[in-house]
Amino acid sequence: MPDAKAINDLIYFDLPKATALLTQLDGSLELAANPQKVFDQLERRLLEAGAAVDVSAVQGAAAPELKSIHDKVKAVSYLRAEGWATIEDYERFKSIADHSNAMIEFIGRCTIHSVEQSEDYRKAQQELDNVRAVAKKETDRNKRATLEQRIKAMEQRFRQQVAEKTQMEGLPDFMVDGFGLFIDSFLHGRIGLRVFPHETLPEFHVLANLKKECFVDSSFENVLAAYGAKPNVKLSVLGLVTSIPEQSGPVFDPMSLYKAAAEKKEDAKMEHAFRQFFNALDVLEGLVRFSRYPNVTVYPLAVYRRITLNK
Figure 1 (cartoon, rainbow, N blue to C red):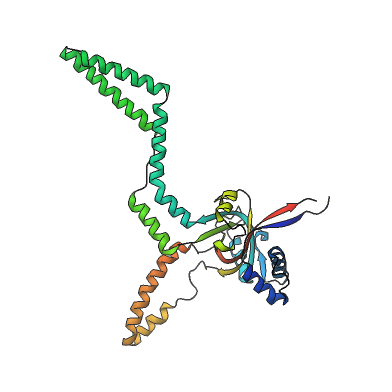
Figure 2 (cartoon, rainbow, N blue to C red):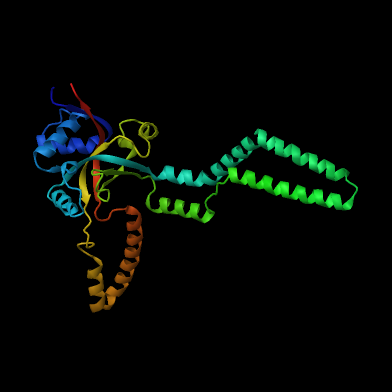
């Protein structure tokens, strides 16, 4: 049986950056008009030159292997990763959150309408109407009081049955507003990609921010419709490593410079105060950047699906 071969179906490709890199490697622009050839040659050249590592090929399933993976990534500038993926369109998340309560209310009303059309509901409603009619005509005060108690019990049971079939709660308004505020402040227009190369080591994954204009399909919505936000087929990413967080925290803290200067010079205290304010904002932004150990962040050149051919 012949060796299995593969083709790469490009989903996302930053052609200008890829062409610029390939030109520096090969000194030629002749392939610039063919994105697929540019990608195939660039990926091959980066791997052959030892400038990229395939983190999917790094073996190991135990926690200590995280260091081994990080060491290999630190030794190069580019990486390739294949695995399960998630696609996070934050503007889409915001839109869903903004309309969530209205959608929940609509679903609830549809459910109530469906319940009201059921045979059980109609029988119960008819029984309740009959008891009300009897109570209305009853002249004996005691008998009428008994019937009224029965009606109340039936109505209560009726409401409970409907509520049980329509149990859906919306989100508090402050939560919807706060979610939108965070996205507008820190994640506006972003599309995040996470690729998990090792199923047994899910804490290690590759993060990337995707630009809408670089999707091969002109409509990003088509990509989501085809693959979904959590694709059930594996995807690959090739990118420039831009962040490798250390387990011990940042290697360099620029705030230490301003703090030391403020302790020595009076005129440096104002700058230190400003820097502290900016640093507080940086910390807040860091919470939603999601770049933390043991994750690795890349500037993506390509996202694609590798398809194996048996012939």
